[in-house]
Image: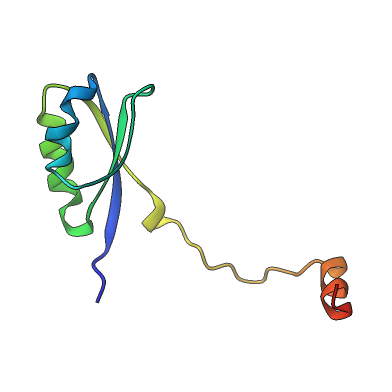
Length: 91
């Protein structure tokens, strides 16, 4: 069974601090220009990890990803009539 994961966006001051940030989760991406890193952590540990990361002196702020909270199942979506006709034609 898969563990539920959630992303954390960590804004920092210097790229040399990536090593310490990497210890708190699975590092996916780090931007040199915008000075942020994207980490994935277990969903149970999100609040704890956010507190730990915010305490670090070189971290500006930590923002959780809202992807797990966004509903992705849509009800009552009507298909486009033109596309539906094209699919029947086999185009």
